[in-house]
Image 1 (cartoon, rainbow, N blue to C red):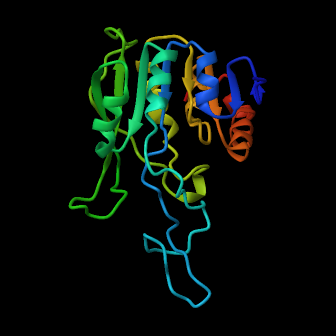
Image 2 (image 1 turned 90 degrees about the horizontal axis):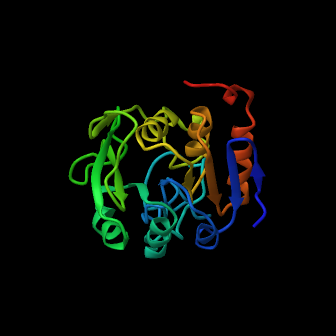
Length: 232
């Protein structure tokens, strides 16, 4: 497949990861795939004025509803393990058992991303964290010492987001600088935060994204002059 974009550090493919992953071999998969929560828009109003969305709030002009992501495809996990000896997989705590069952490699540790605010209603407690699960074929020799609780602030407002489920760049830089060295691949690149973090760290990265619109967002971010030689 011809890359959608390529520079000295990053290669981006626009397509389905199930088609692209079998052609790759990298040191690690680092990804934040669809959660399987079928996230509805914050507010949807019929012509008669009745609100139909699953969630209430101000009118949402930031993202379309993602009714398509009803669950995790186990093939994503199998192909990730076939592509890399280490898989770092971000997700909601409820998804751990399903993801763990679908992975070829055993789970080695769980990182808790502790946010600086809660990001949902009580259910029965308001969530202030997400998880990063590390799976690997063998033992891991990280580049540096770290702990299992990562206190990293969220992206403050929609004004600064490129994607509705976007991770803060600092979180992905911390993860990449902890993982063993080598090229990484994000098969669900979204708006490209993992790729941007890799480029800032001088690390080779491959991204795969299904949406041409988000591929254009990724290219725009990667071409920003502030990335060149940046480390913060």
